[in-house]
Image (cartoon, rainbow, N blue to C red; front, side):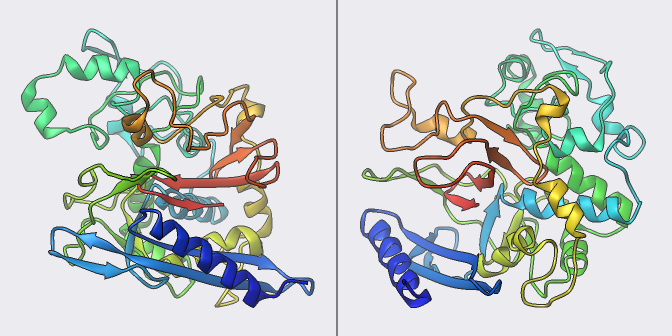
Length: 365
C-alpha cells in the first residue's frame, strides 16, 4: 500500500519534471480522505516566477502570494451562498434593484446599438453564467458591437473588464462564460457594506488571507500558457493588472495555494473549515453548489469550452495543439462552483467531478 510519503515524492517528481520541461514554476496540493475519514494533505513545488514589474523572481511555494484569477469565482460563489443562507438574498431574486446599471446596459446589437433586456435577470443566472453576459473577445455579437464603438470608448472600457458592456443574449437562454461573477462581487459589496477583500476574509472564517488586484503592494506577474511538450507562451500582462477602484470578483483574487486549498476543501468537508473546524456553509448548501444546474433549466453546456486565452495558441487551421487535452466530446454541465464532467475523463477524473481554472495555468478540481 502506498503511503502519504510515496504520494508526496511522486507529486514532487511530477512537478519538477514539468519545470524541467519549460514551466517556470509550479506549486501543487492534494487533499483526500483516508480510510479513517481524516483529510490528508500533501504539497509539491518547484521553480520560480518572474515579476517583471519589480525586476526580480520569486520561488513558487505553497505560501507564495500569487494571483488566482478566475479561480476567484469559487470564493465569490461561496460568499453568495452565505448570503443566501442568511436570507439576505435568494437565488431567484431579480438583480434590477441592487444592480440597476447592469440592467441599464441592455443587450448588444451587431450594428453597435443596444436594446433593452426583455427577460428577467436573477442572482442564479449570474452565478451559473446564464445571464446572457459575455466577453468581447469570445462573443461574436459583443465583438461586432465593440468594433462599432468609438476609440475613446475603447480606451475607457478595454476588453474583458467593461462595466458598461451590454449583454450578448437575453438572460436564461444560453450558457456563456462571462464577467457575471464580477457583478456578483459588486452585489456582495453592496449587500454587506464591505469590500470583497474585507468581507471574504471575515466571513470565510478560515484564518486565511485574500487580497484583490487593487492592492498596491502586489503587482501581478507576467503570465503565460504552458503547452506540455512545447514551451511557455508569454501572453503579456493580465487585463486585471491595472489597479482598479473595486475588488473584481471574477478574477481579481490574490492568495497562496495553501490558503486557496483551504477554500476548495469546503467542498470536501461539507462546509467546515479544514484547519479551524468552523462551519462556513451548511452541508446542504455545499451539496446544492455541486449539483447540475443547467439540465433543469433546459440549457446545454457547450461540448467544448476552453478559457478564451487558449484561443491565442490555436493552430493555424483553428484546431487545438495535440498536446492539450481538451476533453472534446465529453458531456459536461455547470454547477454553482464550476464545471462538472458528466463522464469520466482520460486523465482518471471520474464522472460527476467539478473543477475550474484560471487562464495562466491555475486549476482546482
